[in-house]
Structures are given as C-alpha cells and as structure tokens.
Image (cartoon, rainbow, N blue to C red; front, side, top):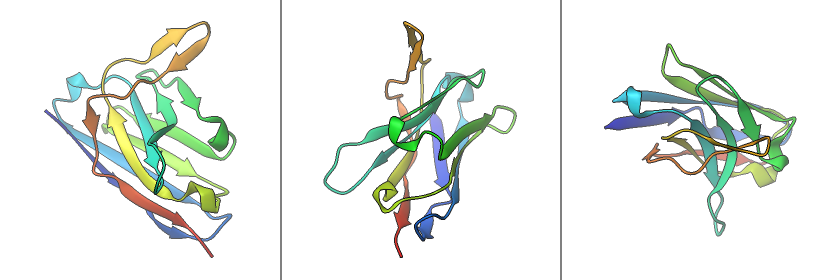
Amino acid sequence: QVQLVESGGGLVQPGGSLRLSCAASGSKDRINAMAWRRQAPGKERELVAGITTDGTTSYADFVKGRFTISRDNAKNTMYLQMNSLKPEDTAVYYCNAGGPALYQRGTYYFPPGDYWGQGTQVTVSS
C-alpha cells in the first residue's frame, strides 16, 4: 500500500503564497507519476499540475505562471509552490499518485492515480 500525507494548507490573502507538501510512504515502487488536484465546493475535482518521475511537468491553464510543481524522489516528497493566489484558488488540494503519465502528440496527460492523500484546505480571502 501507499500512504500520501499533505501539509501546508491554510488561509492566505489574495496575492499571497503557500507551499504544499505531499510525503509518500509504504510501497513507493508503486508510484510513478504524481499530481495535485483540487476540489472547490460545488465543483468537480480538477487537475492542477502533474509531474513525471523524471521531472517533466504539466499545468492547468488557470495556474500557469503562478504555481510550480516539483518532487524530490530521494525524499519521496512532492511540492506545490503557489504564488499570486486568487480567491478562486480556494479549494481542498489533494495529492494523487499512481501509474505513469500518458504522452500523446507532444502533451503529457495525468489520469487519476490509485493513491490519494486526505486533502488540505487552501483558503484565499481578505
């Protein structure tokens, strides 16, 4: 089994920054691609950013230029640096991991993996 634990959420003012972390433990050999997904009240869960084992990244258009995903394979930890936060970024952010990303026509896709963290709340409000 794989356990994912997020940390770093909280309340921040518009324009502020937060850094989320996701620590993986257990059968880490089952983890290939990792991703951050979020779910706002009344909305479906959506992909925020994904990262392959070799560090190739992909971002949703609504966070490009503001968020940065990274991972430290030696520490089995993934990060999401969130800058220039907006009220519409308010959501529960989930760490997600599983099989490899898919590569088609020059684009990486990150289908939902089998393993999920418990989620961490990010609230952007003045």
